[in-house]
Length: 233
Image (cartoon, rainbow, N blue to C red; front, side, top):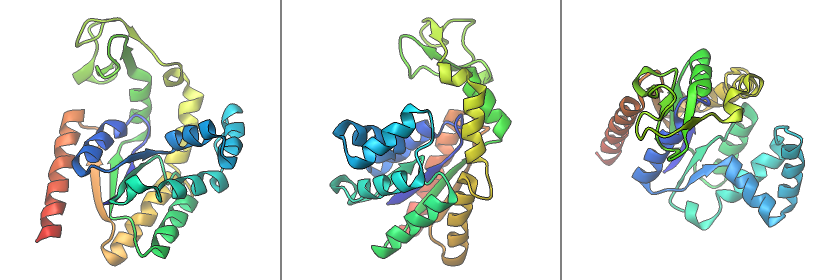
C-alpha cells in the first residue's frame, strides 16, 4: 500500500499518520528524518541539504526529490510506505508520480485532513507541552483538551511552549506553501485527485480536521475499512 498523507501543520496529521502506519505495518516516511539521516551519514545530498537547513531555508527540490526517491527503494518499503510531508508542491507530486510509473506502480491512497488556515494556526499557537509526557494533549484553543489552568489536563504536570509554535512568521511561511493552490501542497493534492478522477486511482479519503482527534481517528478507521472491503470484494 503506497500512501500519501496530507494535512497542514496543526491538523493532527502526525497522530493520524501513526494510526495508518500501525494498520498497514508500513514505514512512516518523513522528509525531516530523511534529511537528518543523509546529513549524519555525510552523503553528498546530505551535505547540500545541511547548508540550506543551517541558513533556515527550505531545501530545494533538486535535493529533496532524489533523497525521497532513494528512500522509497530501501528494503523496508517493499510492501508499501506512508509519505508524510512529501510531496510538498506540484513539482514534487509530478516527479513522484513519474518515478512510480517507471516502476509500473503508482500511489494507491491519498489521505487529506482538511482544515482552514486560521484554525490550523490557532491550534499550533495553542499547543502546550507537558514536561512529564509529550503525548499528553493540551491546547488552550481546543475546548476538548484545554489544560487545567497552567497544568497538564492529564497528569497535572507543568506545561511549556515550543518556540516554533509561537513564531507566527514561521507558521505563516509553512502555511503559505501548504495552502498554495497553484504550485504548493494543495496543488499537489489536486494533481492526485485529478488522477483519481480519470482512473480511479489513487483512492481518496478526505477527513474533517475541525473534529476532535478521536472523531477523526474513528472516521479514518471507518473509511479505510470500507476501502479494504471494496478492494477484497
